Image 1 (tube, one colour):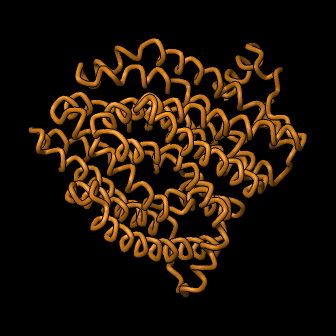
Image 2 (cartoon, one colour):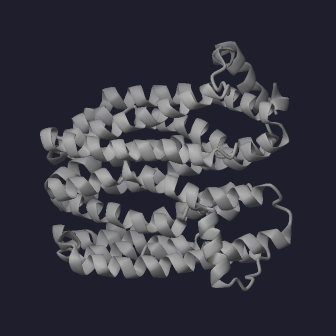
Length: 438
C-alpha cells in the first residue's frame, strides 16, 4: 500500500503547506471584518474589479512557469547546470513579459475609463507584477522544498495585515489597500529571490532574446490554457464591473474571496506538492502513477465534500461575521459557489496533475478553451437577466463543464481515475494510520 506512494517528503510537503496555508488565509480573514465595514461594498468592488483586471498581467508574466518550469526541472533537480539554465531562461523570459505588460497596462490606463477614474488604485495594484518576476515558487516546487514557499507567503500576509490595520481608517483610505498588498508581496519576493540564489547556488546565464522568445513559444500551450481558465475565474468580475455596479462587484467578490480561501487551503498545498511527485511517478511507470491518483482521490474528495456542505449551510453566518449586514446580498452568491472548491479540486487532480504529466497539454487546453468560451457566453446571458446571481451560476456551470469534459476524455482513452475500492473507509483508515505511524 505504502509502496505506491512516495517517501515522507510528499506527506511533509502537503502537511506543512496545509498548516501554513491556513495561517496565510486566517490573517487576511482577520482584516476583512475591519476593511469591509470601513470601505463598504462599492469601494470593495472597485478594489476587486481592478485586481481582476491586473490579474491578466500577472498571468502573462507568470506564463505558467510554476508548472512548466517545475516539470522540466523536477525530472533531474540535482543537476546544477540544468537548474541554472532553467532559472536563467525563465527569468529573462519574464523580464520581456513584464516590459510588454507594463506598456499594455499604460495604454489601458489612458483609454479605459474604469481604470482611469481610479488611476491610483490601478497603479498601486499593477506594481504587484514586480513580485511575480522575482518570486521563484516554481524552483521551490521542483526541489520539493515547499515549506519555504509557505513561510514566505505567511510573511507576506503578515506584513499586509499589519499595514491594513495601521492605514485603513476611513472610506477614502481604500486606495491604500491595493498599495499595502503590492508592497508586502514585493518585499517578500525580493527576499525570496535573494534566498533562492544563495540556497541553490544559482548563476544567471546569459540568454539572448531569441532563446527567451523560443521558450515562450515552446510553453505557449499551457500558458494559453491558463488564460482561458482565467476567462472563467476572473473575467466574470471584469464583466460585472462593466455591466453592473461597483456594489454588485463587491457582493460577488465578497463571496468569491471565501471560495478562493477554501480553495487555497484545500487545493494549493496538494497541487504544489503533487505535481512534481506525480511527474516522477508517471515518468517511472504510467500505470503506477494512475493508481496513485486513484488512491489520492478519496483522500481529497471526502474533506472537500464536508467543507463545501458546511459552507452551504453556514453561508449566512460567514457573510455576517466577515462582512457585516451591508453585504447581505452576498449570502446567496456564496451558497451558489459553495461546491466550487470540491469541483476544482477534482479538476486539478485529473487535469493538471494527471493530464499535464501525461503530456496531454493540447487536449487540456482544448477543454479549458471550450469552457472559457462557454463562460463568457453564460456570463453575458445570465448577467443580463439575473445580474450578480447570474455570474455566480455561470461560474458554477463552467467548472462543472470543465470537470465533466476532463473525466469523459480520460475515460475515453481508457484511463480510469476513480477506484471505488479506495473509497472504502477501512482502506482510508489503514492508509492514514500507515502514514501516521511512519
